[in-house]
Length: 173
Image 1 (cartoon, helix red, strand yellow):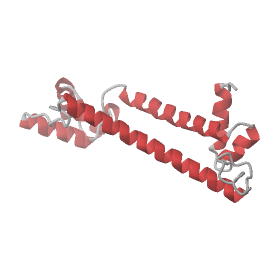
Image 2 (cartoon, one colour):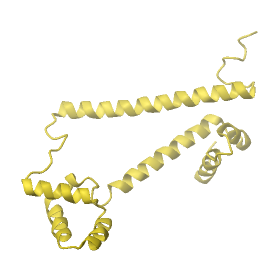
Image 3 (tube, helix red, strand yellow):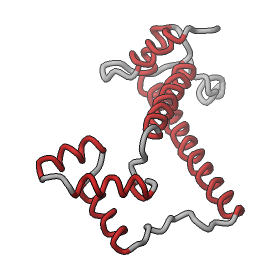
Image 4 (cartoon, helix red, strand yellow):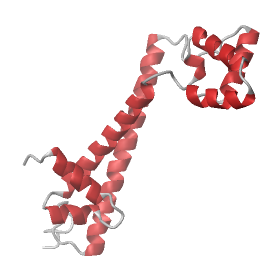
């Protein structure tokens, strides 16, 4: 059965309220609990991806990634400001005083901070990417296992007889 996005969002928000349970919401709505769990996972992933997209806009937060021209501009502007003006400048530019200090030290030393991933071979980059992906998948699998265990415990506590796992139904006959 196809559900509208509005219905999905409504059910996810209802299920995640502290006073409601996921299984209770699914039962009242007449949808399988696994479907509701899937919608919750999709909502989490879309929230994470929208947050990461927002972070990528504009100037990077890590000052070591800024182009040297931008650093020079910031240092020049900051050096001409009083303490009160400096605070407003830092807030406007999204900086901390420690960022400016780091830039000053790098400019004085004539060095840029070393980049961590510079000089990796293609095999090392692929290995790094695969490890990251494996770690992400392991976390997702652990979360799915935890949800399954919680679902089984909930059924056991509530005395739900229509267990779809096949563990309790039909084995004692």
